[in-house]
Image 1 (cartoon, rainbow, N blue to C red):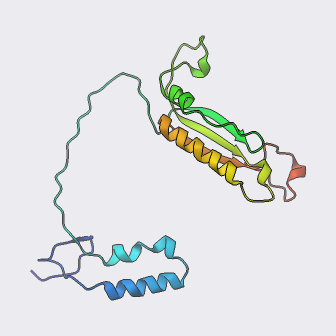
Image 2: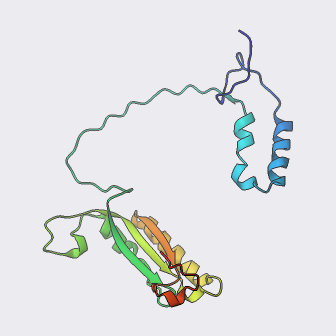
Image 3: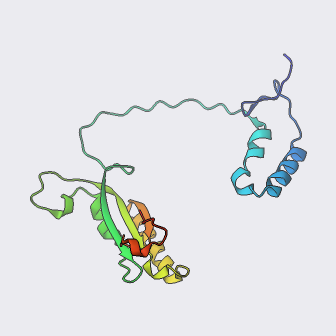
Length: 179
């Protein structure tokens, strides 16, 4: 059987040519760097010109037992709402978020006839103190502490940023309001 170049990314030496790609990689890097798009396309030359050895991996069969039990879904489901401002930063509590991740009555309402798991936490950051300058190191550190607390609690944050909670037209000279 005649050898040919692999176009699938799997290289079988007995069937495919092994090419010295170093010169092509150097040229590709030069072109990408010259075009100022290096971060976006840095991996493309490697993927295009690399001939990797084939690896035989056996498929794994996974069976799940049906269950009617309620369980935490880390990607979707119920979400708790939190927000903080740069003028009065209120940090997240890992203990509070962990309790939300456990089965609980929504909003702590004893009249609720159902219980929920909440593994998503909306976190709104209002940056009203930073409209004319950079975000302070203290604010960034507080944000990092929130992220660390969320990780410790096992929840995912849905993060949003805004400079104001107001939507009056006088604040926005171009006619666009924040969303």
